Image (cartoon, rainbow, N blue to C red):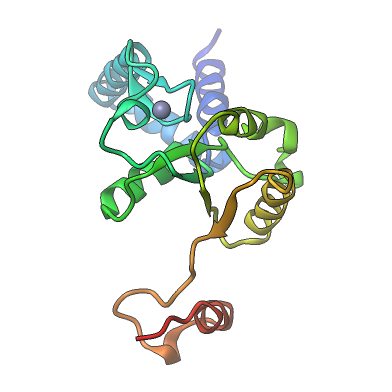
Length: 199
Ligand SMILES: [Zn+2]
């Protein structure tokens, strides 16, 4: 293979990653070819991640190799009555960082997205139903994004849980911290109004 073919192959691999377009992938491939030290650092990080990081087969969050179910699933101090359903493991990390949730998690590993070929069978929805069997969950919180695909995903999960004796809620959508009313977009403002609380 000539140099161009190697670069093309690398670009194709990079372009498979979420959020990376074809042009960005080409620029990354060129940058890595120009800077061997950066390429070495990346290879080491990739290998370490490949070796030491796994997905929890229970909740779908990231866990060290050999720790499955993960610590979030097995911690005795967490609340077994509340389950938070998210799109991706990165959402779990964000919610954990907020410190406001002590229940269990379930990652769907995506959301319904006909444009990118993501249908119901690609979501970990059946695994969600399986987790409810014999479980003590009284509330399931849908912490799903607020775009059209997120709304469709919430409706789908809501229907799926219809026959279950469990309260299904969705995260409240409010105004961004530190921002004024006048600077909010109309959808955010509408949802903030609908989700208002007594003070
Ligand atoms: Zn887990």
